[in-house]
Image (cartoon, rainbow, N blue to C red; front, side, top):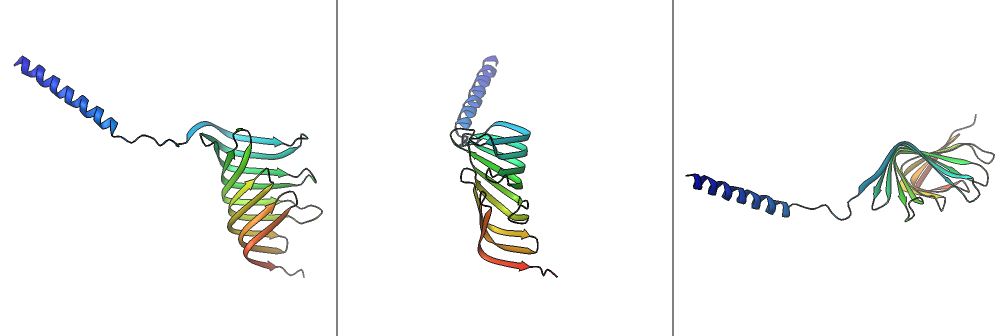
Length: 190
């Protein structure tokens, strides 16, 4: 009887072990391109300077998470400020969410994507009134000082509102262009 109990225990233990090993071999492994959180931060400010030591852009976020291997950084409650060295004017951009794409040199930002409640503000200056732009997504290319969207966009200036699908912005020249199905309304100055 004692031999029967020992033999049964060994048999069931071996069967259990074989079952565990075979089930582990059949489980799916993580794909090779899975993102891994490398670092994170709260209430972060990133500032980029130009070659002359002037502030070129500042990015602020309530939360920041950097992932590898694709070198992407996710942002929450985003504020981006672009400064033009030529006339000290700035563009202020805000959104609920954003993502930074980095070059091989992790410090260089090649693209900034903003989405959810994207708003751009260019304060009034000598050449134009305050401009407020609202859209749902925006892709910014800092090196080209250029941004675009293919989404519905509303542009507001005192006494005028324009809307259209798609927009391009050239930050140094302060020019922006609505691309398709553009309509405009003007207030009477009476």
